[in-house]
Amino acid sequence: MLVIFSGCSGVGKNTVINKLMSENDSYRLLPTYTTRDMRPGEREGMPYHFISDEQFEQKIAQGEFYEYERVHNHYYGTSRKLLAKGVESKKILVKDIDVNGALNLSEILKDDVHIVTLFLYVESADVLVERLIGRGEKDIELRLRRYEHEMSKKKYYSYLINNKSLEETAALAEELIAFEGRGGRLCSTVSVCDADPKRISEAEKLFESGEIPEPVKVSVKDGCFVITEGLERYIAAARCKKSVAKDLTLATNELPACFELEI
Image (cartoon, rainbow, N blue to C red; front, side, top):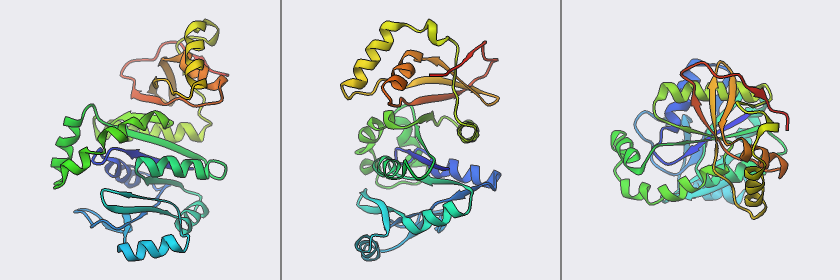
């Protein structure tokens, strides 16, 4: 399994990855090659291999990348060799990729590797600015120029998490990875036969027109993933052989009686 962590720059992707890896040795980081400078707390290979523009372009010419992007004036790329080694390890691979690279890679590898795409986000650009300042980012305006573009891509991911706190996000990510390992069968507080046919039809029309409906809301507790809002959109996605993003939250109370979905 390859779990792709994506989202806006500064949202905390690598902080979450580092916490997961520090607490569970079944994970293996899949480093990205980049031409940007090393930041405080980083080291060679964790989470990036740092090389020059010339070296990166040589690797492009030699076909060494599955995908690569130029973001904030720096290259980022996914190595074919590193991915092959990761798959051979039989461990759960985790990787931080920018929004364009994440979607490109998931499409390229969809028939070869079990891929889970996870988008981390924050409530607003103001919250993101606070985080960027907190990590010592100097070119905040450059980061913010991509914010709307990055946020517009979240609907194309399998799962979304509002990264309010490291502990909660890491717990949700851990639950999600285990859930996908079990086959990823969702439940719902409403049975399929009680879903609103009109809302299903409306969502199907959106899919057929090339649009993607809003994410469904999913509460998570003790390994159970329950759709609490948006069942009709989920049904429409299944019928149209499409996917709709699942926005995850940890349930603070006991979940109500629910139905296992078979669509």
